[in-house]
Image (cartoon, rainbow, N blue to C red; front, side, top):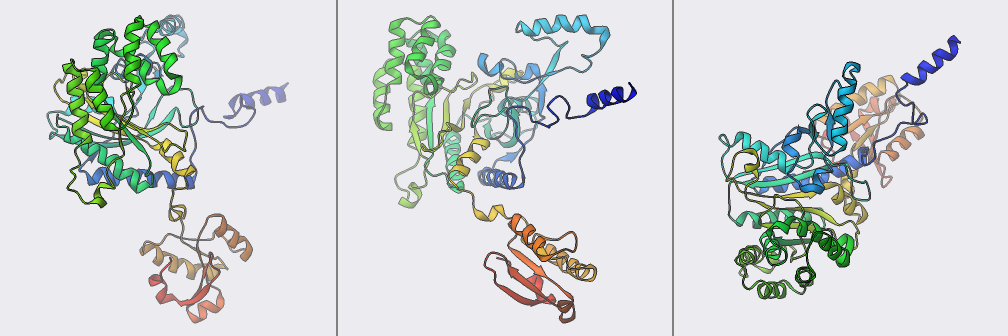
Length: 483
């Protein structure tokens, strides 16, 4: 009986019990091994260098925000994907009935502070707006910031879509100038060119044009319904979009106007001609069209051909809606190369009064986001990562015994002082085992110091890629070129 009791207790306390004895991860999250982390850092550092090049400053905000900060900012669909955090103390037996009652309210779609007051951040934009609202008296405007942090969404995991993922944002607040939108298109272009993603598509539209569409096909009060439906066009097709609009109370004629709008195609110039004709009497549409024309036509023809070849792959796309409610002007979305079926790898837009949500009105802004996890998948599939970033340690000193390893360690530290990533095998063992260790870690150079080398104060450097080796004096080793 005692043994059985102890066995049961062991089962209850073991951290991996309840999953067949195997540890697991929550759905939609991932571990990253050294090779993957190195590649992710390559992406992040590349994007960060472009942000810095354009004068943006770094910022970080907490992983969690007050629930009231996030709720109601992303539209009905977005609010459903916010990860809420349960309050502490909900396991108090004396409050069990109260907790049950409060949970019932939550299940009915009502938020209650008795159950949850905080949530994991859904994106970086709303926390940034909160930061600006709290610190606007100390900031110098226009304030240009970039932010690289994880965010969380209670979405259904699938290829290219995760519940925990990194975002890289760049935003400018305190300026209405469309020069900022032009800058952001070039940030996208510079970053993707540096990463080797040359055939991306940067799609552009204006919420002003979508507002005009709502005005002529159902009224401004239908704006959200229309944009949410249009935003699903790529996923569900035109017929399903029409069904959804019909379900929102739009008439056949109104849906017909929207269908004509969505069928606009051709070159950028042809699309602008068609939209001007469709909305000839709309002052709202005129504002949006002027915004798009400014951004698309900003690069002067006087630039040399070599520069024009590096301008953004801008495509006007009137089907682009971006369902988030806070956008008010130009909106962007970056499409991955067509051969990679992964969808959007970035997006953003203008929000003229986002800080007004927090009691500080009249601070306009515009920003973009990079979908780092999807960018990684694109680069991995297209084999765009440089081979050099897969190498961590450059040099492995073999361990041939106590005296040999002591000598090797002194030289090892000298290489580290020169910035050469080096390590020594942890124990003396057979050559074959140490060679296999270097091979598995992709270490390109091995340094061998035996008793003979100690006497002659030389070491053998072996290039493990080519098999070539040479003898080098101890004093010359720090200047050796490990390439």
